[in-house]
Image (cartoon, rainbow, N blue to C red):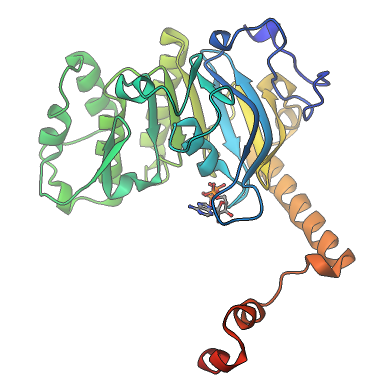
Length: 310
Ligand SMILES: Nc1ncnc2c1ncn2[C@@H]1O[C@H](COP(=O)(O)OP(=O)(O)OP(=O)(O)O)[C@@H](O)[C@H]1O
């Protein structure tokens, strides 16, 4: 699959190294296919995601990179079918992410996001964690699960089934929630910073499990994170966003920078350059300068009410 794809210097004019589907390839050839995605939230003038295209073959593990606010979570939520977009723009397993609800209901498409610390989410539904359940009750409450897979997850995440969910640490709660989220064998998994509370051994064990799933079951994973410890050998693809645009991306073989230095330092360098370029742009064009917030408020409420804020 990978060889068939159009990489660096593609005719479609995408950023260098970005995987773009070629004519003749079917949507179903890709686990995830995004075609020229534009997205903005209601009431916002600026798009959050613009002109975004990416195609990932089954079995890929793509890391989603970018500074705070660059659009990673929004992109993952769009992929998870949480916002309506045109049917042809986001295809998961050849099906439209928003319109085909069977993707999430069947467990083929699974999204584990940041709301997980306080909520239990399964099959795309979230409900607040309010009762004092044991970890075992919660995990075994999920029906139609392969018991071997369940036992393996409990063991690798080092979960004590007797833990009371109201009296565990964030990291322990997160382990239980990850376990529940992975009980059913997904085909496409979207991870939004879910390993942030895990200690290093828990995180590495999880990454190893996920890698094995991709190799054996040809699942596809997109993982947004700011934690890069031990991630370099894990990734097969990368996508780097700046202000909602895909600036760099593609197969890891085209990611020449990480052959010379650690991902942490490569990303640090890119983020600093992006910040400096933004600063320079603002200096050159005074209209682009951030207005002090009281000016905006003045415009909205009139001077009289500003006495309140002074
Ligand atoms: N519901 C919303 N309505 C309006 N704007 C939003 C909404 N959610 C997010 N945004 C804006 O969209 C932009 C992208 O946010 P997003 O959460 O996708 O970034 P991110 O790359 O995941 O950031 P982080 O690394 O901090 O998690 C931000 O400017 C944010 O303020």
